[in-house]
Amino acid sequence: MTSVAVSKDYVDDTVTFDSFNLDPRLLQAINKLGYDNPTLIQTQTIKLSLEQKKDIIAKASTGSGKTAAYCIPVIHSILVDSLTRNQTQAVILVPTKELSKQVFEFLNQLTVYCGNLIKTLNLNDTISEQLQMSLVNDSPEIIVSTPAKLISVLEKNKSLNLTNLKYLVIDEVDLMISYGYNDDLDKLTNYLNLKQTTQVFMMSATLNEDINDLKEKFCNKPAILKLQDLDNQNKKLIQYYIKTNEFDKFLLIYVILKLALIKGKILLFVNDLDRGYKLKLFLQNFGIKSCLLNAELPVNSRMHIVEEFNKNVYNLLIATDESNEYDEEDELDKSKPSNASDYGVSRGVDFKNVACVLNFDMPTSSKSYIHRVGRTARAGKSGMALSFVVEEKEWGKHKASSLPSAKRDERVLARVEKSQSKLGFELKPYQFDFKQLENFRYRMEDSFRSITRAAVREARLKEIKMELIASEKLKRHFEENPQDLSTLRHDKDLSKVRTDQHLKRVPAYLLPEGIRPDSKKVGFVPFNNMHKKRKQGGKKGGKKKVDVLKKFRK
Ligand code: AMP
Image (cartoon, rainbow, N blue to C red; front, side, top):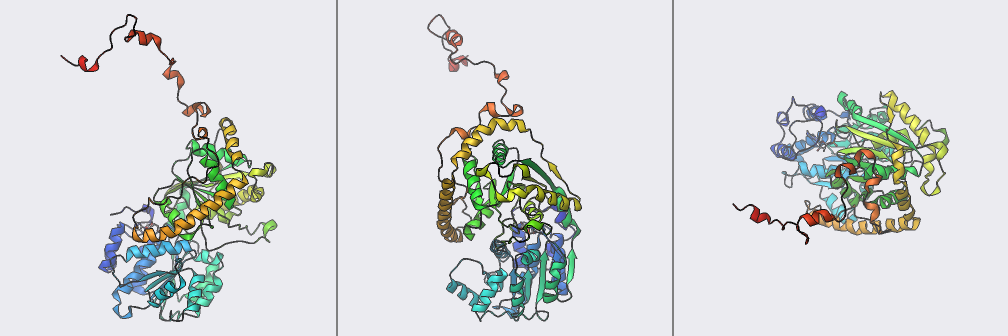
């Protein structure tokens, strides 16, 4: 059995999967996944769906087992209903391509013992249009897609008929709304025979008025599930900030990572693409390996990076989050556009076992702060968030490290503090001996200087070229060898900016006293110990060399 990480807080150990009378092929797959008991959301959703055939709106965040909660009843019903084979019976809508792939792969795990009875299709997969058309024409029983992609396929391919659809899942409903998918969802209603034949599942991290409109359009007297324990997860998140200036952020990150002051996997956020590359090159100079995740990389590579990060292949992931959202109350910036896209690094994607979310660049709104820090302390586990906050008076003083959004860091922090305190949480200043940093300043400046704009540009181009090639290889390779993950790593060093090896090692004199090797205990060790040499058989009157083997003879 593979061990799977879901917190005990979520597991409903009063119930077993056997008690739902699920199809044995499905049950066997659940066993293979290593699930002993259902989670709370699974118990409720499976029962309501199978026994009462009700529409369901569930408050469920990633980490609670929500994907299985809707996949299990859908697969079970398709398996037991032999009359409706070879028709598309379920559509699962998700807000991002990454999630689409994630859900698709999960479905494949759950249907591993179903032979050809359940065909699944991910419409967001990067395949040729002809191949996609032929796969759609094959009437896959379950389709996973983002709303926009589904509409574009429906408009092009008239043979995809959803009027008899039995299940419609809208996952991450709150994100669907904030990503502006409302129009696509509206259009979708024209292709469905809702409220007559279709059972609807709507899963959302928050249940607020925003989703009422969708509820009216899609659901028929839905059961609303609000599971109390889901709110408790935030209590396990400890939040810190450090007030600093723009240049010192590089000093801080170097020291924190080099001295391993944070244990476990780190998801580090920057606000623009070039900064991601700059930081990677900067850290690379010190022998600190990291892996980049940004919207410019092909989707296959992005998914592969997330998968490997989840399998603990990498410890440090630098994610570019360019969401540029602004809080409602931020009068100054209301006019600025939000560039939400169907790419979600800070949202939705199931990053596993993240010990720390590190905001190297503070996000631009309290909303995106919540999305970012939500990548840790998931599924009831504990986690830490650390944010570098640039003091307004310090902003713009060091051009080469400056970032426009950092001008408002303190204001964003104030709003984050306000919104977190409403939930009963507080952000604390990170305790750190700033004097110790000074020892490292010279090395930091040395490394920083070497990362010119040209070096960043070159690294960015090379990385994309490499990932594009790798992406194609990946697709083919992992289709054939799903187990083989060692072929393509994403944390390789970027093109060399410099060859200095000395930066990779931290000499003892730079270390803070607490962790410096204690020279007094070792004592003075002369380079040539003549005295000893003489005693142990030097030419002048010493004893003969001891033959260790002879010494043991009786
Ligand atoms: P989700 O909330 O769907 O993103 O799932 C979060 C994680 O929990 C995934 O890694 C699932 O494989 C895992 N999971 C889901 N259901 C169970 C269960 N009943 N027992 C153990 N792990 C589970």
